[in-house]
Figure 1 (tube, helix red, strand yellow):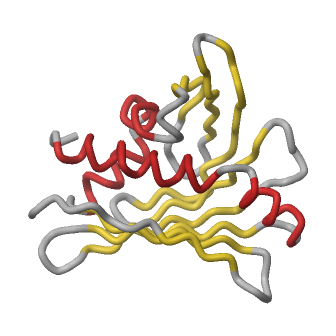
Figure 2 (cartoon, rainbow, N blue to C red; figure 1 turned 120 degrees about the vertical axis):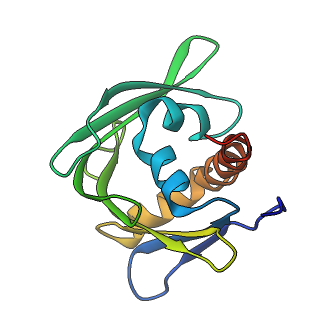
Figure 3 (cartoon, rainbow, N blue to C red; figure 1 turned 135 degrees about the horizontal axis):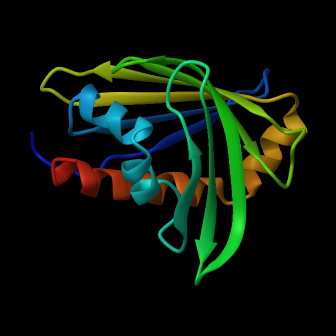
Length: 162
């Protein structure tokens, strides 16, 4: 597979409070999935380049839980937590995603890993939140920078065979 810069699409639905993120990777679903469930790999790519990620809890199985913090220059900037509702290897992850600063703003996220012709993967992440205010707050928070830069870092890891 050749490495090309991929577009990350972030789509907010008009009639329901959802955010859909679609991104293709030049790696098979097994690798992309592993980068989402292996805490050492996840910490290396998630979020913007200006922050580091510190995993504080990680049990990537159906019924497990997770938590991580984002740090800048040794200072915690934000932290997140949730539960793994379904972990179906190489196919799907369903989890909750909560920012500790907004504990009532829980997102239910479904990630699907679709094998593409040529061996790549299309990752689709659908986040459902309680209302449009929560959804719009997420969109205006700068999450797009974290998502796009994170996926660029993931591309780099996958290119190294991670």
